Image (cartoon, rainbow, N blue to C red; front, side, top):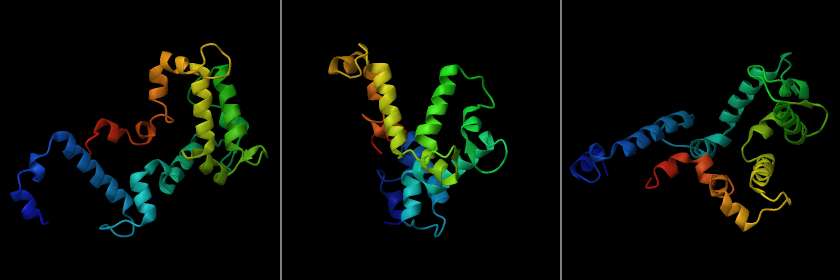
Length: 187
């Protein structure tokens, strides 16, 4: 169907779309332009994944890696030590926040436990599909939802704090990875 046919059909005319739909289409067009590196009219599998799951695209992960290194790599060697990763350069951290960052370094970032995280380890850590993040989400849900501190979650405890669980990646991964779908469910 050509553009002229679209304009003739009042239901398909882009000018008749609601503002939110027009904004979503514009956003998709911009994302498509960024993702389509090899051919502007089509996407290969890596480009499609970058479009549909930009949080896991290699280009975004590398961008996040560069940000991480710029922020924490004090000696510029392209690697991070626990001391570098734990030291937050722009904000004052509580002892609990420092401890959490140390635990993240040991259990999620320094995979080979040699005291240094290389680029491969950092990209793995930054990937939202990393098992570490699922375990971290479970730890946070248990910590905040376990009202009787027995190390277990009962249905009653979950129902006592529904927002915590309903906004969780476990219950609603679309909310975390694709908030535009939740905001515009008819897309």
